[in-house]
Length: 420
Ligand code: EPZ
Image 1 (spheres, rainbow, N blue to C red):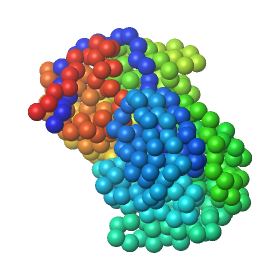
Image 2 (image 1 turned 135 degrees about the vertical axis):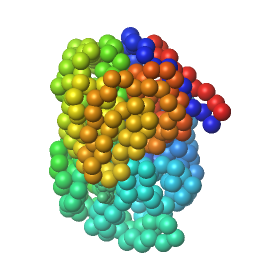
Image 3 (image 1 turned 30 degrees about the horizontal axis):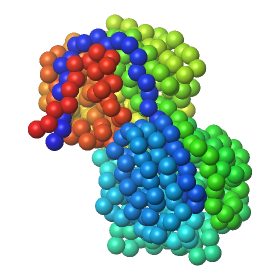
Image 4 (image 1 turned 45 degrees about the vertical axis):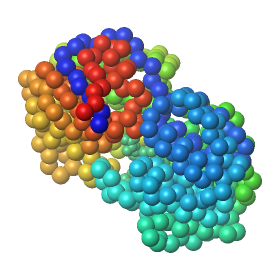
């Protein structure tokens, strides 16, 4: 199995190009089910999760040409509407095919994703919303079986909790439904905005894009005609490289980034003493050698993202005072704490709050990645830890970071991928 070996202490410099957003590409790929014509996608990140979802579409009968950052998907001849356990258990986001399959074919079976390392992650809100749109749903043998023989009908959906995937599933379902679907308390993440925009550009009237009330005027099962789609930059990858600059006290320039999407991370790093040059598609971080402590509470966009919590915790270990980091979205997203402590950090957990106390230095050790963002926090810590850090189970990283070690290497890090 592959692992990453980092010898910490190098200062980084230069620029890094940010890849397309995994969490935008996934719903966009799922949305191609709403069409029966070829759709071309560009700026896809070259990561395992994308290949997994494309494999699922292939299993359903989709025809796919995939070449690194570009794919053409033709879902004209889908002949199965069953998303099997083998794929869904590997990647929760496969649940995103539920809305579009049901909307286009009036039936589908999707394996229940189950929990994952960061929390229980139920899909009750997706299911309740689809039921409100007329779907009949039963859970049997570990599968969600959904039916809407006469098609889905527009409905008013009030989400009890803001859910990114739930909002995306209902936007896709609403696109082919009969009548108007109004989503209240919808997610406002840039990835949700991109999904709305590509569906709007495919001919569906959508109001309230980027707000907490989205109204979709369904086509009554008329398939969509997508234009070519360019995936937006990955804001979490971008934030991770900013953290790499902050933790190693290095100036790094990010290219092909949307600075607006990472404003909350920029704000926190500014509060820690870093400064920035912000262009339209480019961003340079100027670090400080006296990082101030920080208080963070994770929340929905545009507030501070849970997907950046672990990386900021790594940076906070190098601050000159105690930082407090509260995780409000997922009940178990602190698996990196004990691994960071193995590297010499002094982090204490009380419920959903982590207290990160200052330490003079981190020291290299063998650590284990537990989920995607936890893994990147360990890489960040490894970049400053004295000596050798070996990070195992990096298949988590490969799911969502495009060429992480190659990009860090080109910035001057001492990092290599090894096999054992
Ligand atoms: C998306 O997951 C992202 N994944 C996650 O990124 C991200 O952490 C999360 O949004 C929050 O921003 C993708 O976009 C593919 P949610 P999602 O539904 O859609 C609860 C990464 O590292 N909830 O917004 O699954 C849920 O348990 C990943 O790239 C219900 O209770 O997240 C959580 O507490 C990890 N019932 C909260 O809502 C439901 O039916 C938010 O989850 C659905 C969600």
